[in-house]
Image 1 (cartoon, rainbow, N blue to C red):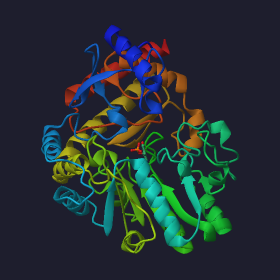
Image 2: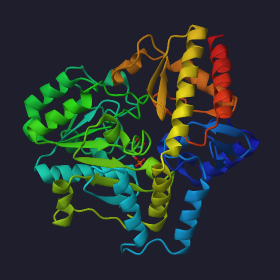
Image 3: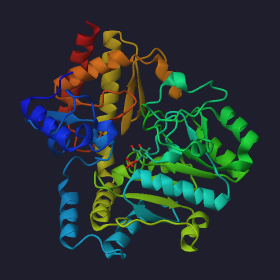
Length: 436
Ligand SMILES: Cc1ncc(COP(=O)(O)O)c(C=O)c1O
């Protein structure tokens, strides 16, 4: 694409000299000419080092529900920073943030804070193993639960051709350096197929500690579960005494205050939260039912972290949750998301390009395919090249979704009707260019 202006290119050269590939997280490296260096964000917009402005649907992979640099959140964080942030002792701010969380997600009996989604899912899996005395973990093809060894199999980004047969999926290991024994503890299932899940549990249910699921596949177009699917997972876990973990790192506080559990009316045993809980500040949580999280209190199950519950994270969470609890941001997010979804759909129809809008108004994807995707393997039907070309054209016009369609467009309450109009025009023009 060639996305770097002269100042951005210069900064990226400095970045490469200082950081491996110029990034602090592997997913951020877009190639030597296309990795953008950001100067700042304001509301729904980000600016690169050349002063180019982008309407941002990347939103840092989802957290920025209220817009970049939200003044209320920034003020709470500044106040907390000035008061000192790390004591390795509980603070009043931490308790207030936990109370705000409990008010927003009423099914939860208790929680603890961590800093990242990766830590949260790691701890949830440990709790589930301790609670059940079992070792196997079930996850879905195309689901991402963080960068730790236990879950880095068949994630979004895994080649569809490497997943084995649908009847007996092969865990595709997404990184070197994972011990072979870990691979033997994971079971992989296609999403939206209760029969496949039932078969697995009939075979091995008595060994399954946990079924971890993104209730909406937030790393695959924002694909929604079929009606009743999550209830079916709940029933299967109940039948076999396995722990149902909702990974709400992307859906939590984004699909609505109560996340996917409230949206679908299905209560998990444990759930993990991060991203929209802190509007971009590093704060995460593991929450759940008392009989499972009680294992922390009784001792024997380890959860610890120097920065867990630190002043910055919990101040950001308290401020963000207070604002989200008014309900007002969701009205804006729904208005913007719905307008974009309908607008893109209309343009695809006008231009005669086969495509489907997938997901929820707070995070949705666009599949360039004849049929709407129903599970991760359907990615094979998506026209990847066309999508990349269209998004490349949009970025050139100052609109920034991620150019991998599996990563949804994220919406913030700061996006304006004008942003929507500019975005749809850019989408139409870029699609026309790509069609030739
Ligand atoms: C559903 C889900 N779970 C867990 C994670 C890991 O979170 P983090 O990057 O904060 O470690 C992610 C990150 O994108 C995610 O999308």
